[in-house]
Image (tube, rainbow, N blue to C red; front, side, top):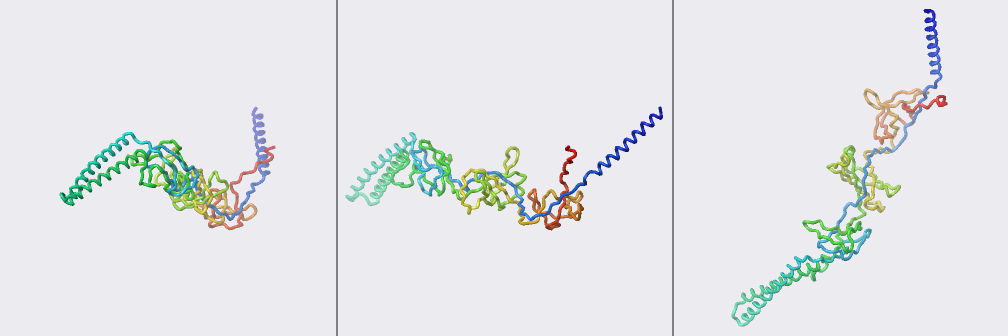
Length: 372
């Protein structure tokens, strides 16, 4: 029995030994890893961050009436280019019953006062002509009569303004004629003929009749995340792309960063504004969505390599690459890095053009025998 056990153990040992030899043989038959290399190249590297937003006019002017009423006529439409003082609309006044009655009462009272002062004036003039009263008494009577006449005329004009919105003698300052206050393009006319409008005053913004803007002065208005706002500053260059205008990039300058963020969808967003270059005459419609690439850093025509080629010392965390010195022989070389765009990185020191850099993290090609 012991002899059988011994034979079994020896057989197992022999099988294990043969298996180990076969494994080592197969291992030696595998092709050695051949590392590929890449050379540095001269590139322009731009480090940027992207903000989403839209194109809007730098300034929009809202035209509002200074009298309430009904839109009688509209003389413009969206897209028209108009000048300052051009006629925009005409308003028909619908008088307030209470105000109209008060105005009529004021006219009647002023007429009674004027007629009474005229009687006094006529009597005083007759007495003055006879030498009964002094010139001073006559002058006082004449002044009182003239004041009564003026009050009567004012009451009549006020009554006419309440009824019609205008009166004779005020010329182009008629409240019923709405005129442009600036030169520009009409962006929107939110009212139609027959719509009721409310005057602009201290207690009400009033109804907007038209929106005007200078379309030659457009800005990019967007938002950046709080994680990016610390990287940007005013006067940085922008490259703006508009979705509706293909193959076109607009230059701009970042001139405003909001000092306070606003929470949107759980993240803090900061508003930014950038003025587009006026030299570009391309017509951009207000409100078009756009993206702005904010250039944080730029290195032109510099020696660069792929970031994937860079290794970092586990202790010092300093960057280095492995340079080919012979057939599949490499040596470490410390380098100094500059601007990176996430794919390529500038190499300030440590490399020269023509160096062959080891691709250390390349994928091992699949074994064709294993696929079969």
